[in-house]
Structures are given as C-alpha cells and as structure tokens.
Length: 515
Image (cartoon, rainbow, N blue to C red; front, side, top):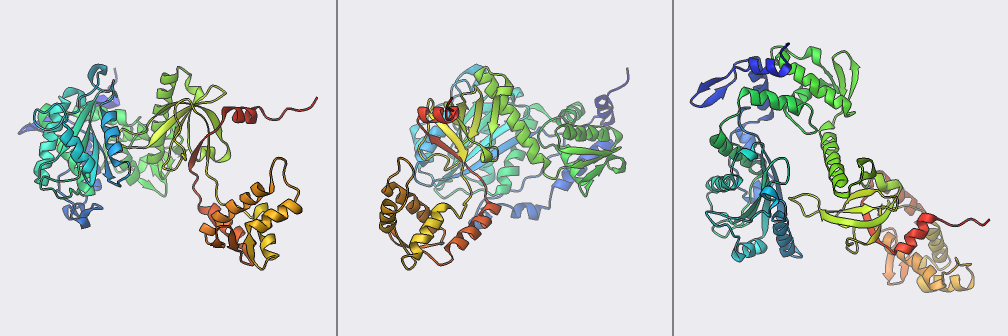
C-alpha cells in the first residue's frame, strides 16, 4: 500500500527529545516555523499594541509557542458599565452561562470562583454589578476533553493574577454542550486595590492564549508529529483560518497563487500537497477560481467568507435539528438579503446570538412553513417582540426623494413667503385637496409634518416652532442631492415590527379580483 500524504508528512518530522521538549528535524518544521515567524513582530512592537495602553492598561509580553504547543482559542469582550440595564445584563449573562444542559452529561453547569469555592456568593455578583466594566472570556482548549476544565480555569486565573500582580474578582462556568469543551469567565473591572483594571489588547488576544497553552502543555504534554500532521490535514478542509492560510497569503501575487513557484527550500513536497488540498477546498467553496495548472485566483477577503459559510451552516444545522424541518426549509437572513423584500411570520424562539455577547436573535416560522433565523441589531425593535408574536421583518431604507410630500410642502411654503405651517396645509387639504379614501385633512397634514421632522434633523429645513418650518428656495434640489449622497454610503439595518396577524394575512393573500 502506498503511504498517504499524512504518513509521509509524519515520517518527515521525526521525533527527538531534549529536556521533555520535542523538535522537528525536517523541512516541514522549518516551513511551519517560518509561518510563525512571519506572524510575529518584535517585542517592542507587540508591547505597544492595545487600545487601552494610553490609559494605563497592563500589558505583559508573552512568547508565542511553536507548533508543538497545545492550541487554545480565546474570545474576549470588554463590557462597559453604561448605567442603564448593566446589572440586568450581568445577571442575564450569569444565568445564561449556567443554563440547563450546558454542563457535563447534559447537567446544569455550576458557577464557581477561586480556591475551593463552588458557589458564587452574592458579594461577588454585587461587585460585578457595581464595577465600571468587566471582561468576558471564552477559553476553548483544543484538547479540553483530556483535562479537568475547572482546575485548568483556576490555574489560568492564578497565572493571570501573577502577570497582572493583583487579585481578581471572577466567576466561571465550564460548558460541554459543543464538540470542544470550553469555559466562560467573567472578570471584574476592578483590581485588588480598588482601581480600574485595564488590559492591553495584545495581552487579551495573545497573552492569555499563550498562558492557557502553557498550562495544558504541562498537564498533558506537547503535541507529537502525528498530531501536527493530522491537524494540518484536517484544517485544510475546515471553514476557519489556519496556518495554511498564512502560507497562501505569503505566496499570492496580484491575487494569484502558483503552487509550482513555491520555493522548495521553504516548503517540503508533503506540505505543498496539503496546501493544494487547502486551495482545492477554497475552490469548492467558490473562494478560489482555477486559472491553469497549479494556478488559482484567490478572493481577497476569503477568511471572512469562510467564517460566514461555517457560521451559516452551523445555524442551519441547529435550526433543522430544533424544528425537525429539512435544511432546505431553514434560512439565515441578513439585512442585505432583506433589502428587496420583507418576511412575515410567528416568532417561535428567541435567544442570545453569541455566548459572550448580549446580542439576540429570533426565529420566525413563516406562513410557507420555513424557519428563518434573524439576528437583531441594537435598534431593530421599537417594541420588544416575544415568542408567539406575529411580526414583519424588513430593513431600514435609505433617505429618498424628492417625494410628492416634498413637492406639496414646497408648494405651500412658496405661497406663504417660504414659511410652511401645518395649519395652513391642513386647511388647504380640507377645502382644495382630494384626499385618499379614509384619510382626513388632519391625518394628511400629519404625514407632511413627519417628513419635515426628518429633513429638519438633516439640516435641510429650519424648524421655527412645533408646526412651523422655514423652507429654503432650493428645497427640492437639496432633497435630491441628499438622497443621492445617502444612497451611495447607506448600510441597511434589520427592523422588526409587531403587527396584527389579520392585517398581514390580508397583505399576503392580496386583493381579490372581480369575476
């Protein structure tokens, strides 16, 4: 039997030991080391990174590990105490990370803190609620199933405290409801002396990850060549960033990668085979286009697209499992997709988008028996919708015009020396205007007043009183110019409206035609 690519790669990275550290002795090790070295900067540059550094944020330089080290994913979020709703958000997050079925064997995970405390006290929660901010982390070791996650968490916190030279107030919860066990940690924004705790971005994104990796290395040892080769092979077919993407980026010229021109002194034939598999995966995902033998045109921002593909597939799988529907009847909708249409249906579920965030989603079951996943934005709802509500989901629209209402406003103002008065327009509508069926003069004038309130905020007209406006002579031209400029830079946003079911049912059915 011919050896596989994986077999050859494993053979090329023969194992040696030296004070319990493993070293690769082939071109593969050299190539992978180059990947890491190209990603690293100098210590001086690394220590300078971090958005809070000018505010006295603490930064500790940690050395990146080589390919033998156990891999850890760290997600972090800085949550500022904005006053309104901060306590409720803290409590909601703690309830969420201790929710049922997220723990070992489907049990509810316990909230724990330092030392042997297994129950989070009211005092700790109160300090979190009163802090100026807090840090939320999700720490996900690749080998989390092989270690005691609770002990790992306590070891990590002790290490962070040593780095920062202060005691921390924190709460954690270990989850086993995904393929990779992970721990949620909430750290108070005050240090042991009562001062604000600020961390540099570099320490949050890299330092904590490196410390977590060190702890796991000590617990279960470093990765061996077979582990490394297997991870490369698996990563080549995953929809997330990996070391192979760095190689692709470094060897892409004018958007094209030519595998035949990759320097053999830098990359072994075995590693080039795995790169080929990665590029082929990108091609299957429509993120790379085959040009000619050994050549592909690579999409510039394909990492973001890969992430979105992976996320969408994951959501649809969960939707299908949750509803019992086929995947073809489940859809993830975005503001971009909704720009030309709207969706109506019943809200059948509501939840938190990300385990580290406060953003929420709703799932809508449409009259056509489809399950639609919608992520809510900050101002998506004027009135919060609940499970069971019948809603319409569409997007905000760019400012447009000139409209008929703008021309009517201009006409009334022109006849009154550039002054628009709602009372004048209402009287004109009552005596001269043929109004739409079911609309009275007051309602007609109110529509124009609503429009003027909008354009006044844009500085296109001047508000003199509650119902009196100064309309410039070039009002129509201003409206047209502003609409054109707005359409070029406009980004749509999700809008959810709770409406009477009967009204939407009639809209769906449409008007009846006379026989």
